[in-house]
Image (cartoon, rainbow, N blue to C red; front, side, top):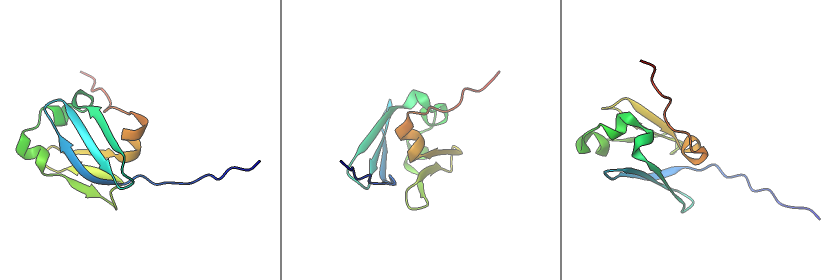
Amino acid sequence: MSSLVVETHPLAREVSVSEDELTVALADGRRISVPLTWFPRLLHATPAQLSKYELLGDGEGIHWPDVDEDLSVAGLLRGTPAPQRRS
């Protein structure tokens, strides 16, 4: 028996941020939601700063220029939070 492996490259199409959650709509119809506490820069940003994001590449990543935060869609799918800062 053989199986077909379909390679997909997930791409972001839309981003929304609530008081406690980051949600990314992907081009293939999936939605990723993660706790905003995973990304302290976003957690402490203003609504105006959060609304100004840029999709990187064809949607492989997301950049918030006003808070200097970059996230990859692949990292979100892996469940990778921002690294903890050392004091």
